[in-house]
Image (tube, rainbow, N blue to C red):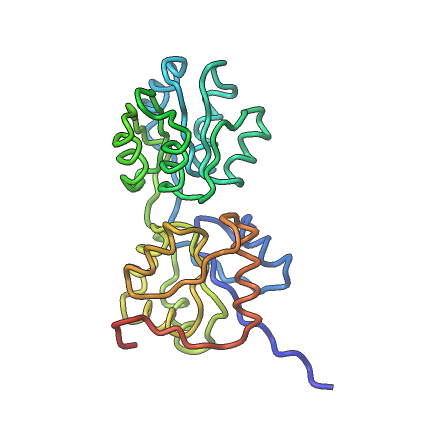
Length: 265
């Protein structure tokens, strides 16, 4: 009887350690894991956030687009003022809020910044609304600009900082890329895409994504790969479990070449 071939490891590029939540999800599915933390999440200068939250009752809405923002806010505002309504980008973010007793008043069909804007547009609740948006230091302007176009007054405050994961062992990464190979590469944010490309250099980044599928957690992250000429696989749901399950499918499908469009690898 022929033994099943050993699965190649799945690369985790989000900010976590080897026992982090995505790594645990992957390992629970029987997948070996390589943690290449291309980004780190650090606390922001809290003065702006604390000032905004001190007058939370003056806002009509608070919008969360990540669990990091949820954690930063809950550390300072365990329960929302009675009239403050809450929007969450996706079910995973909403679930964390609900576990802490926050009601979710708006949840978009598409878990992305554009999806949040579309949900506000459909509900017709943005015009004249005062919206607090606790965000990453690298938040794209999509959400705030889109809500302002709908007539909302948006206050964007930095809730956490996303920075380069400068502890990445680039030589070890290159060894895996050039010799052993990996089964799939997971991306949970556009920042992880940009930082891994910067750390590895375009040549090795292209070689990596030319030999294994890139799995993106959602449309915004997928767009960061598409803009670089790659065709990512979109996770079955915008959650770490969805990212892990889709990675399993990608790895189990066997080797395939995913060459970037318009580039030579």
